[in-house]
Length: 332
Length: 190
Image (cartoon, rainbow over all chains, first blue to last red; front, top):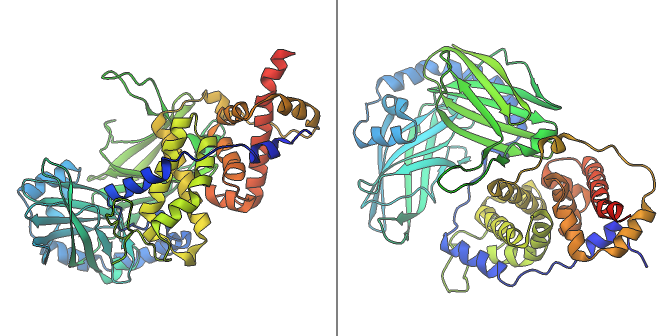
């Protein structure tokens, strides 16, 4: 008797290879999978609207922030080099000294300094003897909200590290953020195999949050083929500009595709979708991060660039083989 | 301290979620369906294993962040699995003709039962799986969620961020594309 397509698909024999589960569990153990971080895109969409209303409050708090900056010491030396290496050099003279210390398992961790604005939270740390705490770090504010690390850099010769987290949630910019950094393990990666040292380090900091400024008017929607690109917000905060964009249409599910040949030592596939920010001279502005949160037929992208000077910038959105469009952004 | 005793006797700290669900339970109870999904989404068997492994590993890593108050473990898991599959596709550098991506086939309303039954009678499971794998990624994803993972329309939709109704329509389109793909060699034979 003939079966329908749906019945054939349901009945497809696809046995699970015996190696998969053991490999996953072994890999989990190897990587010491630990504290997971709550992705920021899980935050309720409603919070976005509350942020808009809250900006007035955070602007009110700006004088206090200025006071905090005025008393912030200049952090130099190795820290400046670390900040440069992850594109955050302009933060060097905006850091607030903290100097909180926690010791566990024979390792002393010092939270040296920090910086927070609407789009990022940056902590500078030192571990003695040198070890890296990026993997298990969780940053929590006074309301119990957790931030996940975005990226970080670790200098194994000095034990200094810089960890960048997402921007602090709304509320913190008005009240100031009382932060707790918790790490449950350190990693020793000094040339040999990575060794993990379990422990319990809790470090505390109070940071003023540089308010963000929503730029208006927003650029008009762009279209590439049948796909619409809608800039949903522009936020200028500290030395960065964040662009949020919603993409709807046939191209939305292909934004992360790669194209081009993979030829060893010659070329590698590149992203088919590209979003660039150019300054008034047409020079690419340094990118700080990009993130995509996706659904089917609609994607939300978040791009951050290092923007330290006011002026007219051009946002260039291109999809290889389809076309590109530009929009102008005036940064005050 | 929460932990998971693994085969080697070592501990995996922190891999017991707030719901009390353990990493190993999660892995063992869902591995088969995750692999069925991966086998349909992937372009080959090796990639299917990679996707399933990466998806399960990703779920274990995020287990501590799972909050039962925010939804079922199923919905949470499959959104992670779909994301892992998409990431794997990105890493593989898959390329489809652009204009093919932009082409949306119109809904087909006429009966295709006769052609379908003839075609289905002639093809083996492996050929059917190959045909699924030849579809665009979003079609593969929906078919794999429905017939590989065994999710209903609402759960499939939740996994990819659309409504149940939209998932129903999208799955119908995906099946239509698959039927067209299956008919291609048949037409050539004729």
